[in-house]
Image (cartoon, rainbow over all chains, first blue to last red; front, side, top):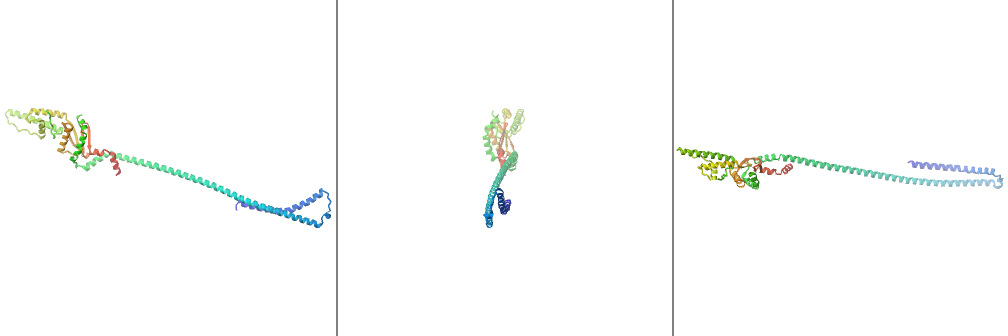
Length: 206
Length: 159
């Protein structure tokens, strides 16, 4: 039971109390009015009515009874209308409360959904940024690695090229040794000399 | 008189030896002539090397003609002073045939009075290195191998 229902219950009990009080107070009020009217009339106007001559004792009691019955009927009707009105009011109030609650809940839920969506979008965006940053960093590292590898390879190639004279000379000496056949090389040697004959001649005779 | 150098005479050192021998030979001829005039018995004719014989033959000089021999000595000395020399380096020491082939080629294609020196370097693998004047012509196998060092280094790097 939440605060609203408690409030409704209290209001219902209060209305019932008011109704009961009205039922108790109304006859007293009416009799007072009547007695006051009698006093006022007697005081204001000096009418001399001989009640006995107008109404008999029996008629008076009948009128009083009739008035009381009508008063009860009126009060009952008023109480019924009040009860109906109260019930209608309670129903309407409950309906309004339901509507209001539904509306507020819907609004809150919508706000929650919007907030959740925003949070989700923000998370996606942040994760996207993180992923982009990671990709960027990965690309940088790969590029740096490739540069390092290429640089190291070039360095080693240069070192090897620098020592290649010694390497090739040692290799030729070790592999060929005394197994060189100048006769087999004669064709190559004379073809090279023939190809550079003019240059050699110019340098020799210079 | 034009000297036709024999093919076996390919170096300046040989030429110097020939000049010395030629002087000695000329001197011996002069001594023999003096002995002959004084009535002494002539000695055995002096020994002449094959190289000198080739020079004499190439110059068309008879062995007993001292005047021509003296002229030849002067020509050879002049030739030695003006000699064009090429230094030939090979992967192995050349035999006589190969030296003759190289000498023939240089005298036919470069200079008829060309002299050569021969050296050996086993680390060139093959081919020939010729130093002519101040320039070096390297036609060795090692140079051919090292012509593209970068490529060789890459191939080594890929092994």
